[in-house]
Amino acid sequence: MRQMDLPFRTRGGRRPGAGRKPNGDKAGVSHLRRPELNPRHPVHVTMRLRRGLPSLRYKPLSRVVLAAFHAARERLGARLVHFSVQSNHIHLILEAAGQRALSRALQGLAVRIARRLNERLGARGSVFADRYHAHVLRTPREVRHALAYVLHNHKHHVSGGGRAAPMDPLSSAAYFDGFAHRTRTAAARPPSLPLVVPPKTWLLGVGWRRWGLIRVDERPGTSRRVVVRDA
Image 1: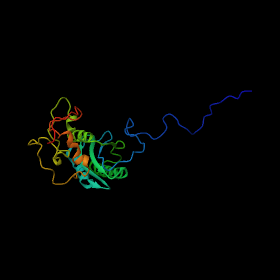
Image 2: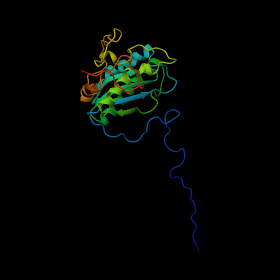
Image 3: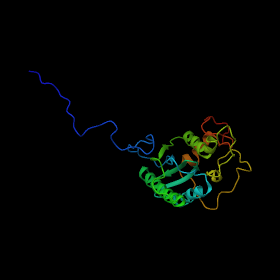
Image 4: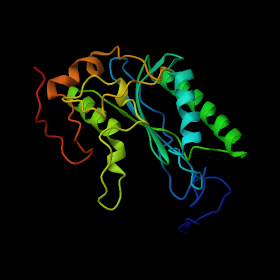
């Protein structure tokens, strides 16, 4: 007699919908283990806020974020070289001694920002929607594209065909010496409170310039073609 295979139901095993749920409507960033980070490679990091919070570009809140940058710009083996603060997310370009150092530094920064924002808003609970997104920059071209994207990110969010200011005061543009032409508006002095540190990696300090200086009138995400070459 042939024995039939019966589908026994158990309490273990994979089930539809099982497992940890993401913050928000969709899973934002994979929870797989992050790959090791070469200290020679800078990293472009994006940190997104959860829904329902006021804009970070509201002056009292932006001050909280900038103060956190000042306190954490060079801690735990990571260095903050560039940033851009948008309404519901933050862009950072960092150098780190390795993946563990990067994760520790960003965790510390997130906790610092969340605590101060909650104090300001009289709120409690999480501030950031999910894990940070990190893109490792391995080539001079990638670094140049990331710099233009971060420093000019405010232009990316102008709606209705509006015209954005040449430089974003809520970015590290005032510290940046890689613009092809600096307008009177762009030549504003950096804040007296240091918010970033100079780059140490070759890619972020020198290498990206092989693809040309960054134009003040560039718009992020429109074209990677470079017009101005560094002499």
